[in-house]
Image (cartoon, rainbow, N blue to C red; front, side, top):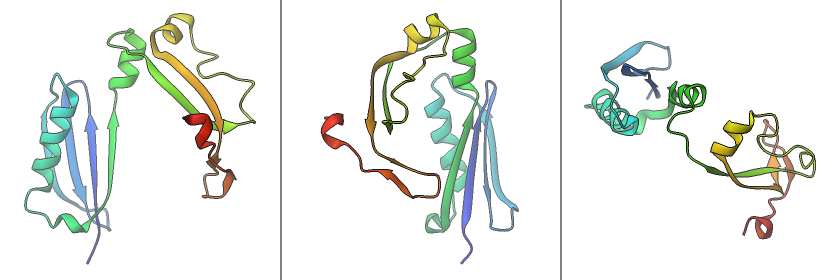
Length: 135
């Protein structure tokens, strides 16, 4: 049984979704207007594009969007976020958002902590997760 992949792109005007098979052939697609709340449009596009498919065949789903880039460029609708970086001790010298413009840093970076733990891109453990530091 071949596996299927889903791709969803949320743009400023339209939300597009496709399902492709292992050969890269598009087997389902949809396009709809991007909604005020992008999550609603994503859910609508996803439900439309997978309608009638055997969901057990879906092996991957990818999402792309310009919303974060637009929010940063326009400095609109930004909210503070907490930052948990798993990279100590190698990244302790550079704090999260250190090179960001001051106004962007103040608008976005909330509580931040850098703790030990993490993996290389190939899955090799760099250091065990410091669960106590996270708590």
